[in-house]
Image (cartoon, rainbow, N blue to C red; front, side, top):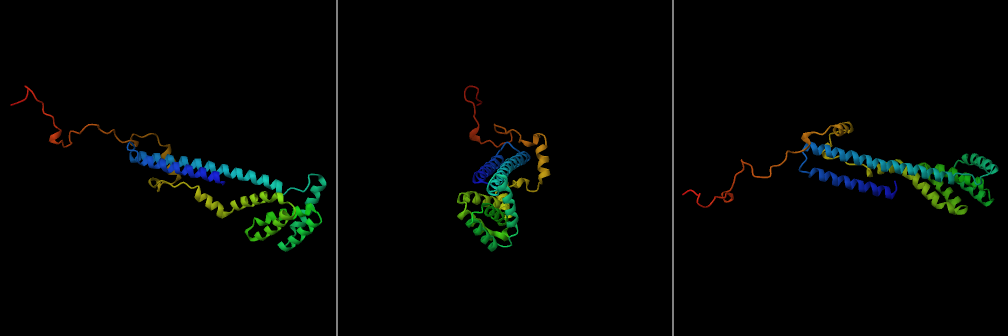
Length: 235
């Protein structure tokens, strides 16, 4: 997820925490009503953050496809270039190690064999996505530094997208975008929360209206009692 996406998630989480605090402090709601309101806040925030996460994933997929089209394409758009690139890809796929790839890359660049150089570069881009084959990054650097420096930003962005799809990055994003369940719903699973949300309005959701004057059962201080004065006063 981008920085803007993560900032949007953080704002949604802050609004959620404030909303929960407001619900807990609402004197008109009963404990039953507060639990229902907290369930609604929890589920609505989950939905909002989920939409942000899904939108970010779609944008990442779109951008990755765009970069792959640019980085993995043939050197030219004519039929001969396409055929030469396919043959070069077959040769590059047979490379066994980084050292052989570097030697072939340097020869291809030296002799102006754009199809072979790009084919080795494309093979290295595929392999560097594997944590066990990160040394193939040196082959990518050879191609970018010595043949196509204008691709440096695109390569860096592509590698960043690949890293973001790793297990650790996905775990970190899941943690950063998680919504903490209110303590009042700790024992409720998702099905039970849905049942709470689908339940109709209940009189028990709100506390009875509070009396505004003193109750007949309240103790009244003598200083608060007014005695009438005048002719009607008893002797």
